[in-house]
Amino acid sequence: MNILHQLYRPSLALLTDLYQLTMAYGYWKHGLTERESVFHLFFRNNPFQGGYSIACGLQTVMEYLENFRFDSEDLTYLSSLNGADGKPLFDAGFIDYLGEMKFSCNLDAIPEGTVVYPHEPLVRVTGPMLQCQLLETPLLNIINFQTLIATKAARVCQAAAGDRVIEFGLRRAQGIDGALAASRAAFIGGCSGTSNVLAGKLFGMPVTGTHAHSWVMTFPSEREAFDLYAAAMPNNCVFLVDTYDTLAGVRNAVETARSLRAMGHEMLGIRLDSGDLAWLSIEARKILDESGFPAARIVASNDLDERLIVSLKQQGAKIDIWGVGTKLVTAFDQPALGGVYKLGAIRDEQGRWQYRIKLSEQTIKVSNPGILQVRRFRDATEHRGDMIFDQESQLDSAGGATMVDPADPNRRRDFTSETASSDLLVPIFRHGQKVYDPPNIEAIRQRVRNELDWTPVAVKRFDNPHLYPVGLEESLHQFKTSMIQSARQQ
Ligand SMILES: Nc1ncnc2c1ncn2[C@@H]1O[C@H](COP(=O)(O)OP(=O)(O)OP(=O)(O)O)[C@@H](O)[C@H]1O
Ligand SMILES: O=P(O)(O)OC[C@H]1O[C@H](OP(=O)(O)OP(=O)(O)O)[C@H](O)[C@@H]1O
Ligand SMILES: O=C(O)c1cccnc1
Image (cartoon, rainbow, N blue to C red; front, top):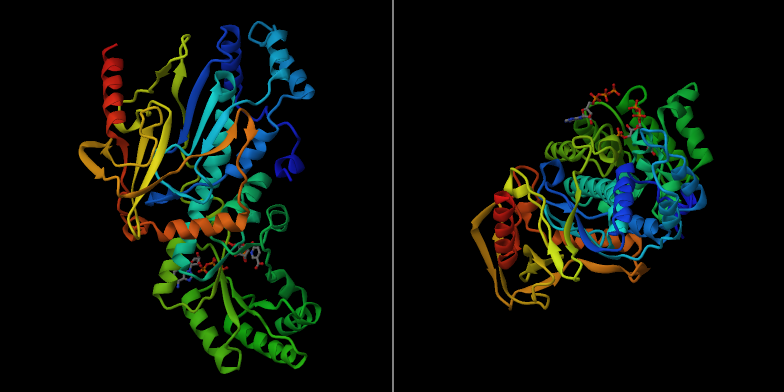
């Protein structure tokens, strides 16, 4: 089931920046259309000043690519675009070429749910120059956002320390697609469910819901509102208790819960949505326990994020379930992940790879040349470091190596061949054909938990996290340094 097809239209090839098409046109004009090239998608900084990120969005990328074609409506639209002189922007021959083009790239990627770090290629696209170029914008659009939200969710769930977190963000999310993509990524990042019913249906995620203040305000009294809700839905009773006076609301919920019990149903819990959540939850817990409802859960919501959850836990809050909306699905404190897509190499007319770099004033921002792979080393309990290396450099069987910190080349780390390792990028498409069977969403979510268990505690802390070691394999570092020197001389 291709969810993008269901929601939008079969062809989303126009979902790119026009400049990708102007460059594609240039490649076509100059006979570079089929020239093999390699691009890497990576980000330079972890979001939220954190120490790690969670890769997310690959399945959406696969759906996008499975039907990557320009249909007749797309071609008609492109034919209608004019340049500054009022004449068509694109030759009819180019439009025909696009109409016949079939996706034929190789794509390798780090599976969704993997903990990833700055500078590591999350996706590598190899294939005809024109196709690789067109994919820059959609791949960044999909991966940047979902990786950002999965990372935020992982942080929120880390703060919740095993308590359930429900994603409540639909009403505040960035439009329809932003909401759906965020609900998916939030579940992958660790949320237990979502209030977003369409996302639940499309992605196979649990949906949950309590009720709003409007329900209570509809009836003459809060008690009546709870009773009528219980009568309508005895198997889903979480009462929102803060419409008038929160602790009086808890007592009303208890009264309704007693009648419910007499009918053979248990109240699931109460929800707090304003006021001092620490104090109110402690007081509410006492009332529930003393009234014979120790199993009733306390749900809290109200502009929560990972920092507030940590603070509330430190204050001894008795909150069992965290409802988190706005600050999760909008990645409130960092609204975008700055992932980029850079050319690593292009074949020359003789078929030899020519490596490419993008220079920058800041050495750390200079892109990495080559056909890159990431090798992750681990000891018995933890991930120890990730080494970016060039696949062409005969290093491709597991083995020891030295990696160099690109920010400080004097810092090196040696891994012996005894150190366990695995290469993170796996084949997803070969010559345009899907070769990867994506795991279901529950398995992706489980992978996040497993990956975070392997991540050093110091890397996971919120304040001044330890910088996880990511380096360049020594020969790649040397090669890159010489490329920078000769490029600067030119
Ligand atoms: N004990 C607490 N410690 C820190 N922050 C808290 C605590 N309790 C609540 N908060 C947070 O403080 C913020 C403001 O909450 P508060 O209920 O005072 O305002 P509000 O949302 O405007 O309430 P109301 O809906 O009654 O106007 C929210 O983000 C809430 O989650
Ligand atoms: O606070 P969030 O993390 O975004 O979670 C979603 C919020 O949406 C609902 O109320 P809404 O904000 O619509 O109204 P209210 O704040 O007046 O209750 C709900 O009660 C939560 O507070
Ligand atoms: O079910 C809830 O309690 C809910 C859903 C969306 C937003 N806020 C709360």
